[in-house]
Image (cartoon, rainbow, N blue to C red; front, side, top):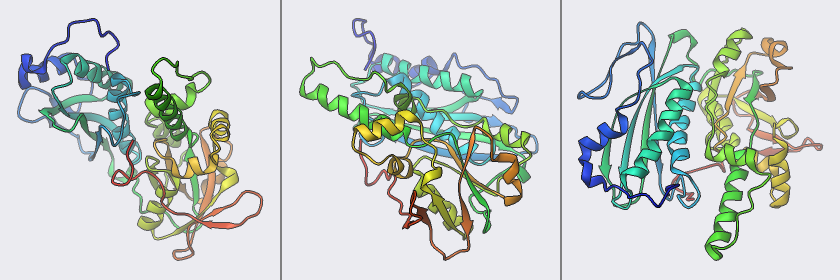
Length: 351
């Protein structure tokens, strides 16, 4: 759990709830002009200055979303922030503040929470967001982290899931499937360790996909890139539950259908090689794996020339009329395979 297990650990009860909150949050700086009152009062005050406030929240629960057998606490704190900032980025807004609530059992010392909040601090610094509140409480069921993210944007620039039109182009940022394959490697090596603690984990060569799983990044950079290209997406969503699931969300909210081309799915070489090693279909990892935290969006066909050769974007399909069905166009054969939501579902999946 902690890198230095030789140090004397501090019981949470020694600090108490309010002392713990102060201890964990007193060194977080305020960098956003919209933050008018932060931690220390009954509630924070945020002044959006004529912009719309965009709010999202996500919860990570031990045994469901993460396994502390191989997830470092510092990485967990960082990831808990990033997954929420990704939702703000998916609205084409700029993240500005977060609130963090932690439920923790008495098997965790203060030093464990210090590690989590060190990761939170790294994320706040990386993305220039303010920690303005939250809560801590006891838990009888392991560690739970809940983060609420706040962002700001002018109303006319906010992108929803509901604006796609037939013939719009379907575009994805970055590459897909890496986080899922990273999880498979972590699970494999953890199983080997449990069977024989003397066995050294085989992690060499998997750096990229392990980072995609343990330390993902929110694509807050995409907003500026699209502005530079003079492109305003017609709809947008982040890829947290697998590409297929997110395509179906856009289809449902926009009342259109989609064709996605298998040969266009962007994947890193490490992802492809690892899938082959594990006898998995890399395209299925991209479609159903989840946790890539890239952005999926639609644009007008008139914007095709602006984006087609850009290294950060891949056109993977297009929208069709509502009711025509959502399909994967198979590589080589042009066979139409119905898209189904087989991605992450917290009520069905457990780490």
